[in-house]
Image (tube, rainbow, N blue to C red; front, side, top):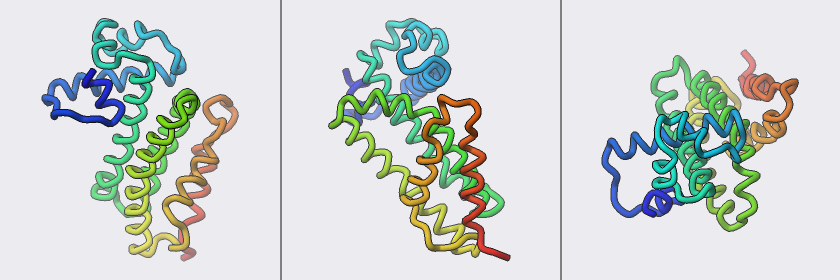
Length: 196
């Protein structure tokens, strides 16, 4: 049950590096299957994607809700960890912000189905939403601050405002192939640029 507790945010003792990698492989596989087939996808499909047996999935995530929460938290962490890396390696802070927003859009478009399932448990959803904000708003703030300090963008927008705007542009994108949320978000990000 420790894996399910950890997926829900309760940690007991640190996992070995190989155990963390194995769990990350399971979560990546589940995320890929959820994108293709939805959150109600068969566990055997997730196991096949991960190259493990179904018992391994259930050992780490005893319930579907545990697996969904684990995927959600894993994806939030990946997005949060990408921000500082992009800022350090990008050609400019604005370029790093744009690339991070692309990752954020990918996260949002593929996670609307997860959020809908999780909202049935309002207390659990509120906890995950708070986790989402606690992890991602500071990352977006750091990227915005860096791009502002470099003189590349205006300074009159908060990270939460930007993230909510991007989130609103992503609503429905997963269900309509004619709607390109990324294109609209690119226009939003371009609008942050300071006039030359």
